[in-house]
Length: 231
Image (cartoon, rainbow, N blue to C red):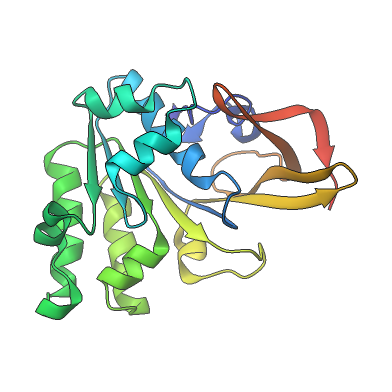
């Protein structure tokens, strides 16, 4: 089964949609479109009647709603629909859910809480923003992080893990464990800054791995305008 990313032009790069129930790392430098891409993924899920979970370290729900308010893909409506659970890791609710470093929480409990939450509520789509959040919650332990991601893969949810990185060849452990890796690029051309997206890895699908042009429109991110970027 495949699920739509909610991003015009992207599903065509991955054979008509993302293979469902898999883990995808969405990576790239700041300002390249990762969060908007992920918000469209959640809005698409809510519009399809799927249950979704968005866990954020970087922004509150109100901040993210403001960031997405200029687009017409219905993110605020998705959050208000009852289909989406938004969890800010540093809100009072988030601190109760995860525990913070000072209380010497059991890092294994973090894994169990999140995976149990996803399974018990039949969550279909998950976004975790970002790998920095995971390493913070899991005491920056590689083995624990890998166990967490393995447990999340077993829940059956289709998951985006957002990763801040500027070098597409600088792989971390989560890139090897993930079923797919999508990299967002910022690059300079004669007419100024441009953005692109590249499917670096996608198990179980024939994909176009060239860097594709990416635009921000009123409807959100749109991939492709008939040209391929060569870098």
